[in-house]
Amino acid sequence: MFNILLATAPPPGWEEGLLRDIWANLIQGDRWRLLLEGLGITFQVTIGALMIGITLGVLSALMRLSKIAPLRWLSLVYITIVRGVPMPVQLMIWWFVFFAPTGEIPRLIAAVIAFGINSGAYSCEIYRSAIQSVDYGQTEAGRSLGLNKFQNFRLIIVPQALKNCIGPVGNEFITLFKYTSIVGLIGLQDLTRAADLIRSRTFSPLVPMFTIAIIYLGIVILLTWLLSLLERRLRKSDSR
Image 1 (cartoon, rainbow, N blue to C red):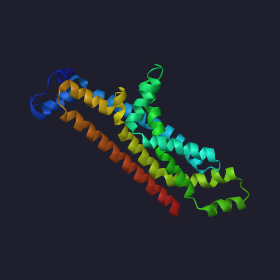
Image 2 (cartoon, helix red, strand yellow):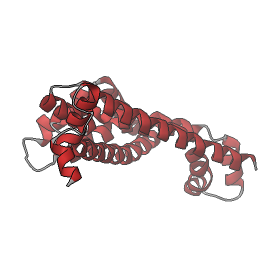
Image 3 (tube, rainbow, N blue to C red):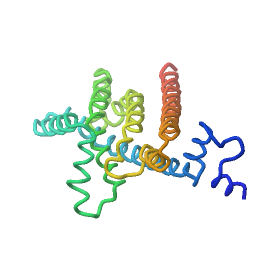
Image 4 (cartoon, rainbow, N blue to C red):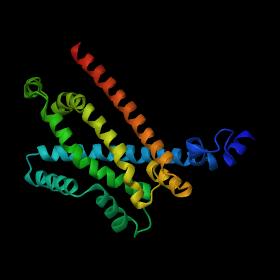
């Protein structure tokens, strides 16, 4: 009963000022649920795009390192095009030109694909640098033990390259998390779009905008701390 009353009228002492704005924007009509649902969409797009980005990034990095010229050129064309076109434009092209006319691809999937392709182009250099950072002498040592090229790559290069790219990949996740705030351009109700929807209903931008700013900042700080903790543990394991 108390929750119902709170959702229909401000509590005593909240009748005016900032407290009333907080009540009107977050509590009235359970509008905080819009932000929670939007945050869920934001994480779905971010995680899905990161998975696609990792796959495409690794493939493009291997193509860049390939001795086959057409593969190198194909990777370079992909990276050049994606990096040269602004992400909002890419997102709208993928949705309005390719997916929306078919009526078969949901907005969420379209956003994941668009951000994933973009992330793959930017993360390609991360994986290429991580692979090339492995000392060539270790590759020679593997060959002296009788390992073929594939075994050398899988058993010696990949484990060390993974450690070298943990930090940059974590930063890419954080960047994606913030950058997905533009998915509202194709009508997907993420965290930012949810805040704008609340603003349009209450005509009060202060509380919803500062609320999502605090949410973004808090999550980024948490992710950065977790990433630094992981990197410290990896450094300790290397020093043993």
